[in-house]
Image (cartoon, rainbow, N blue to C red; front, side):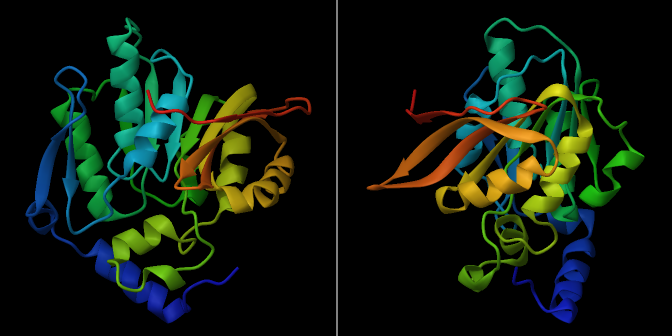
Length: 251
């Protein structure tokens, strides 16, 4: 796996973590989730979510009363959308959604989105490296883990993008092996891990998951032109072999 030069990475991280709160909030915009009064704030100078985040939210099957962990959470769009969608369907549960985000600029947006939607009693934001997650939660305690991980093994295709986008899209500060390890340790037996990946990496990722007692059970291919460019994947801890394949269809 090709990573950034260590000195370059340190410089990037220092730049990302020295933003003042006012600077972070200078260039935000408010978007509607198109579900009730729910809203989400984004910053044009940081990584902004795409339709893939909403696709992943719709793919996830969880209850609002459950214990959900989202890794690489960004501004919180996936869990926020899932919670709002469930509520719209009559789910009145108030469990716990634990959202972990390393980048300070995105963490501040995550906190703002939780407060703006009055979800402080349900959503908990953590600003830390994934390696430290078990300082905050117990192992084998989660019903569901969600992650929209960095897709690329290096940042060679993102030279013109800002640092926040590079970190979100490429395996710079974490990689899928680390994410799968955290998911495997965090989930209860039978717990579900939902994520996106590039179609070309599916078999590599299946091998990685098996190291942590996670088996792929469902794959939905997302079409992009004539290509099935991405996969929505559900893996289950302790599951038997057997995979169901389908193609994602917009509602």
